[in-house]
Length: 140
Image (cartoon, one colour):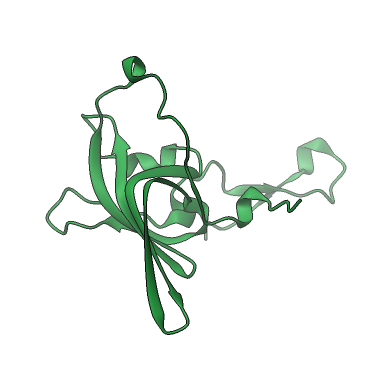
């Protein structure tokens, strides 16, 4: 058996049932494109009807589902495109994630800066005294 850590995967294909139809809620979708290593993924991101789903990406867990997804990559000189109903992407490995439609309400998300910064101080494990364990760090 092969074990691959989740933080090393760019995307996974969702399979199986979509769940109980009576529990589904109405969502707003925006078509987005994500650059994930050697892959380009185009698909629809979902969010609450009153919000921009792309803005909400930073408030979600790192694995983001895209529906009606197309993943493209090169196999030698050939461009290969594969379509999936749902592809779950790892936004922490994305170089970029942005809306496809230039006229849409849009926000370009730098996947590495998508989550708000909680603190500009790091824990210094070399210090034994609890009061001195925090070291100031310049925001980068």
